[in-house]
Image 1 (tube, rainbow, N blue to C red):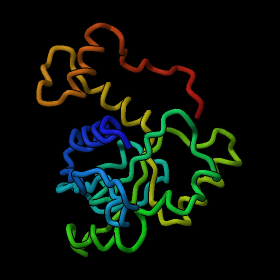
Image 2: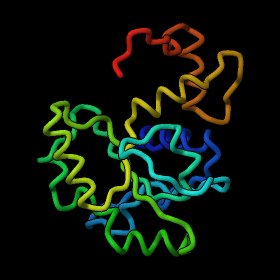
Image 3: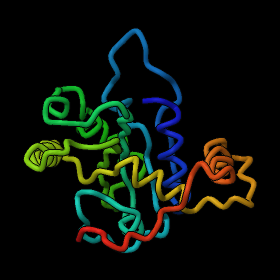
Image 4: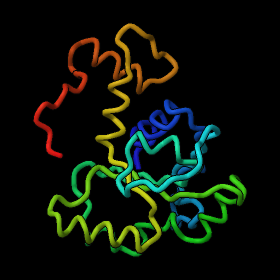
Length: 193
């Protein structure tokens, strides 16, 4: 996972009032990662409303009901994720018991802990997409965010007139928006329901 992908997801959760902890601050090389090192981010919402059922594909509207979560970021933006990738044994190691124990040491046991995956996109074919969802749910994934949703939300809330000097990512998005290289989403009059 690249630092840029992590920065995008971190900014997204922080902009919604979450406390974000990067679980490890080092890159593992020369050995295989331990399960607890597979966690990219831990997020905590101090103002979470009581948990409610949400769809598997998460949106910003679901965030007020998310108390705490383990976040795994797979930012391979050059391909869609299909069953062949998702079935690899080490792809979803962050949902194993060791990672959950590590998160429970930080969050405690009184809050519902969700396991969330951040992906560029799943397979486009409806049948393959359903198989992907089945694989993810079978491995214990509680929800998926897509980068399109996360970036779209960040771009929407960036103001051209503000200076985001404490965040390189937000400052870059502001500059792109100020130069009219990024546009706010337009109303979709004929959106599919």
